Amino acid sequence: MEPFVKKNFSYLSIDSWIRNYPTLEAGFTTKNGGTSKGYYKTLNLGFHVGDDVTNVCSNKEKVAELLQFPLNNWVGAEQTHDIVIKKITKADRGTGSNSYEDSFKGTDGFYTDEEGILLTLCFADCVPLFFIAPEKRMIGIAHAGWKGSVGQIAKKMIDAWGQEGIKPVEIHVAIGPSICENCYIVDQHVINFVEKSLVEGAALTYNLITEGQFSLNLQELNRRILLASGVPEKNILQTNLCSSCDQEEFFSHRRDKGKTGRMMSFIGWKE
Image (cartoon, rainbow, N blue to C red; front, side, top):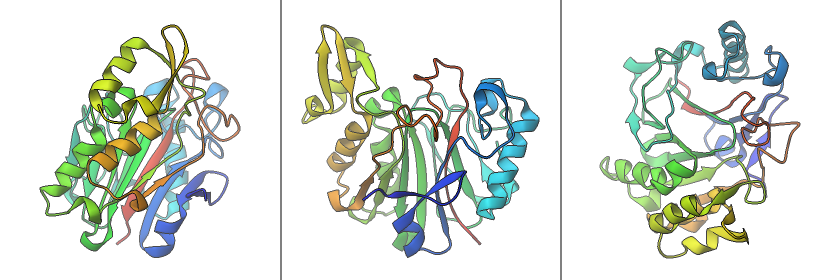
């Protein structure tokens, strides 16, 4: 069953998490329902793609209203396809919420165990990863393109939580809408990194199409990294939604040849 359920025109929620934890907001926006024009297709939430800042802020205010989570409680990042993650506290609220220049630099993941903070990251094909350890009230998100995936940002989050006294068996993960293996074709250079990142089972995440060209399943690569990190299979939710296939719902950097907006992953405990 699809774990990401459409709540309205503008966003999807991780349905089972929301039902089990009523004060949690966790999900992924679509490209619909905002004010941006042209190729941004209305609900662009990325400051760094050439859209008018006023439009982006207006779109963020709309999502804040839909979620009933004030924009000045959000945090955002300057994502660099690396594996740097940061623990967030209430003192960080508002950082990157309405300005790209003020966002956390060189950061591709957030986590927190405090209420009243909405962790946010932007996407247009890369894999959004959502983490929760409900007994410890810990939540997190990560941005996993091919570089972040082979760098094992998923394992980096599991290890960071281990330092907080949280065991992998206590962690639940949702793998969100992103480009599917049929739409994501890469060369041998990328596959070399994939094979190094996960020796056992790595070959099961890609297929040879023609000489030097492979289809790569980034979602499956991240799932296998999570399993290797000790997260039980029953604790992992995986979407069937593809950002490239579904042109009506999602932006896609690859499909739109770089001229596109950004969706947003989000997770936070309400106060």
